Length: 464
View (tube, rainbow, N blue to C red):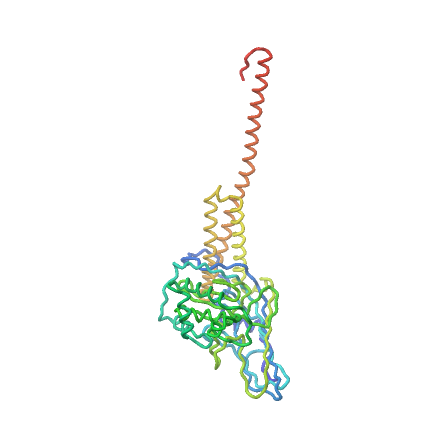
């Protein structure tokens, strides 16, 4: 096998990563509070998870002769709408180039020949900070689609495996949504329909939306294709997301995964994973690498990799993807990620403290403190949301936002803790006062009894 180059190291890849998508790596901005621009909270970020993620692809030539001109495209895990921050740590062997098209990024290898009985093996290792993303969509705040926009035009059109213009797809979608006109409520009805309609069953090849609807079964791919097709059929922009998903924080798999996003004005792309029963949320163990089909190749593909070659050889590609938890300290070169991780931890701490206040009745004794703490907690989430929204376009503003979010979370915790301490103080003082009052009453009552007793003995009236 003839391949030029061996390994792309961390320092080299950092430059590549900067070019692709990482303006936030520039470093911290001056610490200061800024005005909040977000009008309402769209989603919350929780449960930060730092992963060492390794994607390995091995292509074995079983044929009797060598194969030539092997071209391999591998989508790169990056932050588009998945709300995770991915840094390429190592690539081996060195790809010929990195490509970017339609929001997706790819590593590309062009190998002159793979002899019979030999392997072509490539590996990409990432360090990823990921989160649980939970949208809180208010249907009354959803805007009207601009039907002339690029998003609407591209993501409501039919395509291979997503036959949104087929008469059966169209009629089914219209029956499912009924008289409903709000896009969010329409999407929810479509989600419920697909989850109820399809039985999960692994498929050896991509079958598409129409097949899934007719046969009432399919794996994550068919669930995703059908949801997207039905959404597009009634004018809701939607797309398939390809990547990897894990059930635990230390896991190895040979399978990729598919889920979806649908678009709402004023909210953006909203994640939904039908085969995992996640509507408008995604967990921190979903790693996205491809939004929509791979369009830089000759044929559209939703795969985790795409390979072409010449000759009559029999190539068998296999992939392995592994995740394991690592410390946030491995990202110490990127202060923004560390600040985000710490801020989410502070927000979660504030939430627990507010919950404790609710359980102890503090909010009834000190309602103003409780209200102020909740307001600070909401503001913390808003500033964090603004930071994530701005990290690619305005890195210094994003850094200031996330620092303010941390301050708001600390303020919420402080307010509630002070209120809890006052509540504990009351809980200690009130019983003491009550016991003292009872003791005084008992003593006075006892004195009266003694006085009465003495009066009876002497025949005199005692004044007490």
